[in-house]
Structure formats: C-alpha cells, structure tokens
Image (cartoon, rainbow, N blue to C red; front, side, top):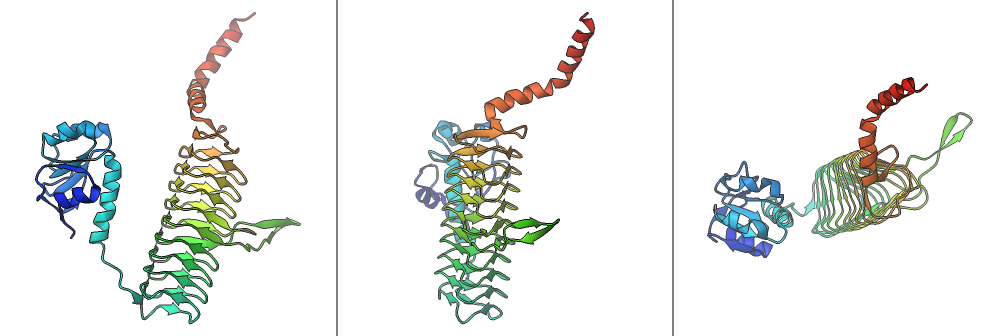
Length: 342
C-alpha cells in the first residue's frame, strides 16, 4: 500500500503545508470517512462545515478556508484544491499501481510483421495483427485485439478486451477502459427496394494524445474520411461516437452520450450524460450541453444549452420549462374565462 509524508505530498503539489511535515499518510479519502492517516480535500464550500468533525490527518483547501482548516489540524493550501486533489490522485495511483512487466505474454499472438517496442507490455491472449505498431511503454491488456496496421502510441494503456480495429490509431499517454471498441463499421446503409444495402466504411479512427475512453464506449470508423478524436478528449462509459464525427480538443462527454454521424463538436465542449447530438450538426467551441438534452440544430455561439422541446440557450429553456409546469392551470383558467365570455 502506498504511503507518503505530508512534506512529500506538499512538495509534489507545490503547495503550502501548515502542520507536521513528518505525518505519514496512507490513503486519500472523503471527509466523512477519514482516519488520522487520511488526506482529504474541500473543493466545494458546501462541505466546509465538515472540517470541524472530520478525523482526516490533513485536508487540502483553498486560501479562503485556510484558517478554519488549520484550526483542526494539518492543512495543505492550494489555489485550486480540486485540481490539487486530481494531481495527488494521479501521483498516488502511479506509486500504488503495480508496474506492468515489459514483454509479450506466452499466450499472446503477435504477427511477425507487427512492431512491438521492447518496453511495451502485451497481456495474455492478446492478438496483434500484421503491420500493427505498439509504442514504447504501451500496455496492451489481456484479450485485446490490435488490428492490422493499427497504431498504439507510447505509454498508452489499453485495459482488458479493448479492440483497436484495422488501420485505426491512438496517440500517446491514452487510457482505454475494458470493452471499448474503436473502429467498428459506421452505421451506413442505402435503401434499395424495401431493404438496406450496406455501405462499406472505408475510413478509420484517429485519436490524439492524452485521450481517455470509458468502458464499452464505441467509436465508429468513417465511411470515407476518418473519424477524429483530438488531443485531451475524455469520453465516459457507454458513449457512442458515429462515423465521420470530429471531436475537438479537450472536450468531455458523460456516460451514455451519443453523437450521430458527421457531427462536428468543437474544442473545450461538454456533453452531459444521456445527451444526443444529431448527425451533420456543428457545435462551436465552449458549448456545454446539459444532461439528457437533444441537439437538433447547429450551435454557433458558446454557452450552456438545455432541453428537448427544442434545445435553446439555458436561460430561455428555464423560462419555458417554468411556463410548461403551469400549463395545465393556465388551461383551466382560460376555459373558465371563455365560459364567462358572452
């Protein structure tokens, strides 16, 4: 189990420590469930009231809560405590996670024409086909399939049962969780006398650096051009990305979101859980779609958008939603007025 002193933690975060630098910490935890060897954090002011009762050995807080936190024990003061927590979690996991041994498991099948870096790790029963390239320090989990001429960048980690289909690529430092399928055929069919004629999907999927893809997420290959996921994109579990979609850098999508074919999503966007973006639409940079919304038209201006009847800027949607809740009462009042009218 990983452990570290407060001085080591503060030095890693580049933050100010108030308290015993030699105090040993053995876990990161919540305020409510903390023990004296736990480090916790407060990023949301609504949890500040828990500072007095928590048993945490140290708490990471922002400057505004410095005195309140210091009154109950050790404290690390960071400009952005949530970001500090995120970086601490990465550091902690890297120390605690067993390092994957370099080399190819005896049960894996690696084509003679594939290229696997000596520092890469290939797990049990994985398949790497002809022409595929696996970069330095990459980790290919058990039962993964790396298709012909596919590419996995340096230090990218694929968990168990990930499929990277033929001709597709992912850049450096990526993370792909179990069950994800990258490069399945896009949903393309031409109607022909009451039946459907398959359109072969001739493009691929190109994924940039520092991308994380959740469990059982599917990213379809393009019909003619490639489906593109730019650097820093984060996709949750069970996200569907259709063929020829282009997702801009550092956009994030929550679970069960779906983007239909040929949509273009800008950079630094967010798409809430269960939200849908219809095909052939465009979202500008810095557009934020609320959970369960349906985007039925292109959005040209940054901002928060919500709703399904139809989608609108968030302020307008809230007004319309408030009116809708009163619609039944308004109808009854209108009928009563009509009866009084001669």
